[in-house]
Image (cartoon, rainbow, N blue to C red; front, top):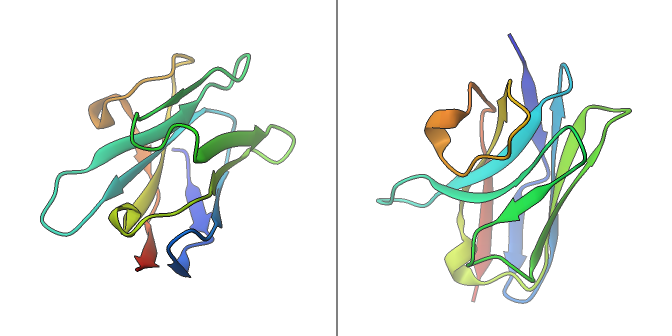
Length: 120
């Protein structure tokens, strides 16, 4: 059972930045998803635990960067140039396999979620 602890959400003005962190109890492939009110959970970014391959949703490419510190089993999501449409609860997820996956159903473990609110 992998445990995930997220931190770093908050309120920021449009154009600002936030960094989310997700500490895992062991090394796994990790991803970030988000869910806005009334919408389905959507993929944001993911990073593999072997080689550090990454994948991003088109809506965040060039603005968000996912990274990891394997010594700490921690993944980060640096979010720059934030827009009001980025407002959502952001969830960290982990999967046992090494492949980077875009589908929530491929992830076995989930964090509690952290709120990100971007004001216009």
